[in-house]
Length: 458
Length: 140
Image (cartoon, rainbow over all chains, first blue to last red; front, side, top):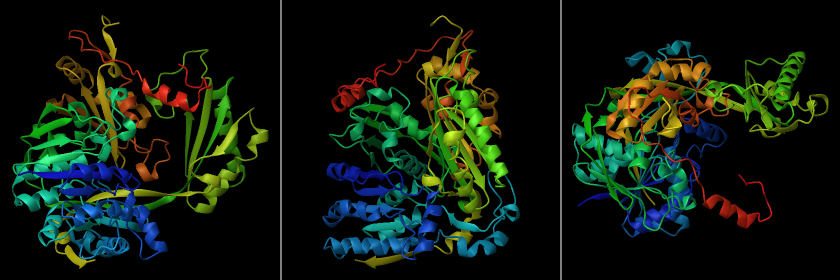
């Protein structure tokens, strides 16, 4: 016996089209990962507008694609699409089922990750005092009021929900890999101290949680040889009871699964690979043995785990001012000089207008905007054929950030020659809100006491 | 120039970069044991810190991952304040892996790794030519 997991979503905004290939190939669990670090703060804005929002709104599209496979008993769905409002996501799921004429689906909601209502209590009670785990800074110095605060829960509540008969499990913030580890714990009855098995499940989840990134997407190897990249597949893991697994992709899809694509994902955003911290185990990715079985199949085994820590990671998001951004393109000759001159004129005009800018960012696209100090200086006499000046700024308030952008417009006729001005991500000159993230640690027992599973039937 | 004592990482390494808050994580992959020995000796955390200059305000940690012939670099205060508050175009550091393999290293005393081929995309021009048969935009 083995369990087949499909990684059907890698972020909020990914395509539900990939689900079809996974379901056609046969998977026991469809795991949908929707929450990047920033996503909860985006969802908080939704909920502020409308109490029934706060989950990732593409959930109904995924469910519409997958519910037929749930009804015929072949698949269950695990997702963190609940965001900061898992109950609202469950209601959206019930509505989706109703629209499809489906009833009797058991939908579980995992609650308890939301720390917002308890921040003051937690600051006093938890051993970290909510200090910043990256910088060591004290939470008392964190500044503005938080927008959201959530702990990364582990996989056991998901396993519990499945044991209670859930067809669809909706969570808020959980560790991404927990979406995949949960069903393995449920299927194989792994205990809380089966460290090696739990580590293997975390590794499998980590490989699958970024959808196409393990199958040839965002791949720095011989990327141009990836077959049919417009049909890039989403991955499948076939996992045995000891945690050994085979990573593969649906038949008939494009993309590639081999040792190189798999190791690219293995080390994605893991910090120390020999001690990858998850809520349920500390996994040693360096212990894993990989074997390329050919035909887009890679086996992984012998993953070792160490006891989990006594804390959950939590992320507190705070308002960090407002930004605006603009871009102006210049052509040869003197493209770079004209860019710099325009940046200087622009900032002087902003200053003369009495607008206060807390931080400027100047970039020369086509020269070194992305590579920064790693880009060698251009040799004397060598000019790039064109250069795009990008200027971004941070202000305390939205009105000022917008007003700064407007100071650029007159430069169309009164700056160095032939700049093609166009507003960037702040379309029409509008400002966008900036958010800072405050990572911290919270003692597990303070969080576990609040974890609940709510079961509803569609 | 296989007999040169200096070699650029892009010619024998792969990479992937990502973020957690203001931390940039870069994995650097060798393709054979010779390549791994080279990066192990040459691509130190100090060298990486120096390479990124003002982009990386904090320290750089290096982890060795021999089971996949890789090094993993954790660079603190490296993203202009972190994804959602950074003013940089690349606020998540997705391109910093590519910036790392711009580094040139000394191979003196060690065997040269097998060099990797440069990109050779056949399908893109063919696909685009069907859309823009008269265009010369994509000539190289």
